[in-house]
Length: 113
Image (tube, rainbow, N blue to C red):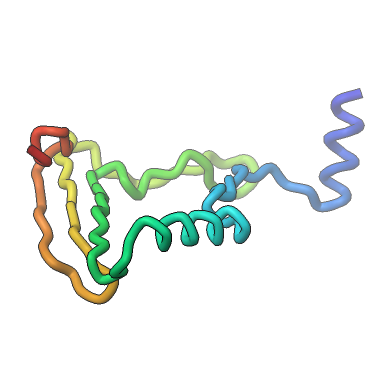
């Protein structure tokens, strides 16, 4: 039965946790094949430039799960202000940061035209 299974798992010290996902990019064989493909296309690796984007708003630190004492609710103090979002765009080469732009709101394709 479900209660027996739950009791057994509790006795074995199993707890409910949020699952994490491992990225495909962590595969060493896939990474080596990608680097070989890039090396075949580009003669001078110093010519490579990479774009990276990141964003933050007031909900960034929000977590869906937490811990609390048995018999008490798990609470967390959190900001309930209207969302104000900032996006950060970076242009990088292999050895230096070329430029950056901080955008209020979301980044759209219009920023790249």
